[in-house]
Image 1 (cartoon, rainbow, N blue to C red):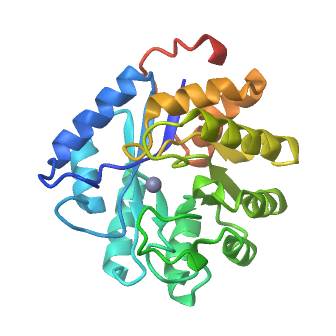
Image 2 (spheres, rainbow, N blue to C red):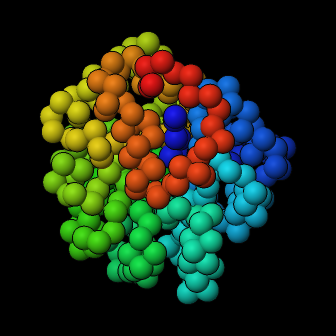
Length: 281
Ligand SMILES: [Zn+2]
C-alpha cells in the first residue's frame, strides 16, 4: 500500500484553468499509474478560480474512497464560521487535517492569531501540516517558513500533532532536530523537486534523507508525500526505492504512519490500486 499525504488540485501554470473535476481525474490517473492507493489533497490558503476552497474540494471528492482533504487555512481569511464548517467536515470524516502556509503568507507559526486553529486541531484530534522551507514563488518570505519556528508551537500545543512539510528543505538539519526533540512533530518528504529528480540532485537528497534516518529521526516520524502536480509521483516512487531503507521502515513511511496520524481506516483505503510493489510487501 502507498499513501501520498501531500498533493494538490491547484492550477499553477495553466492559462486555461482546468476544472476541479479535470484536476481530480488527473490525480486519480497519476495515482493509478503509480499504484498509489490513497491521497490527501491539501487545499490552498487562497480561494480563486484555479485554487478551490475546502468546501469545493470536499464537494468534489466526497464520494471518492481514495482521496481525502486537508483544509488549507489563511491567517487573514479564516473566520469562526469557517472553522465550524471545517469541524463539520472533520466530523463527517472527509477532512483529515489542517494546513498552514507561513512563508507564502507573512506570519510565524506561533502567531497568537492562530490559536483558534490549533484549538480546533486539538479538539478534533487532527494534525496540522505546516509549509516549511523554500517557497514555490519568489514572492514568498522564507524567514517565516524556517522549520525552527515549529518548535515553539509544538511545545506550546503538546496535544496537537504537527507535520513539517518538505523536510524544511533546505533547512533539513533544523527540521531533523525539531522532529527528533518533539514527540508531536512529524515530517513529510514532499516537494523536493519541480517535476523529476535530476541524477545529481537525487543522490544529494538521498544522502540527506538517509542521514536524517541515521541520525536519530525515527522512521515512525517520516511520511511519504509528493506535492504532485509540482513534483512527479513516478520520480518519487523511484526515489523511495533507491533510498534502500529496511522494509519495515519503508512500510511505515509509505503508509503506516499516515494511517495512524490522519486516522485513515483500512476500509477507507481498501480500494487500492494493486500494492504490487514487491519491495513493500
Ligand atoms: Zn504542497
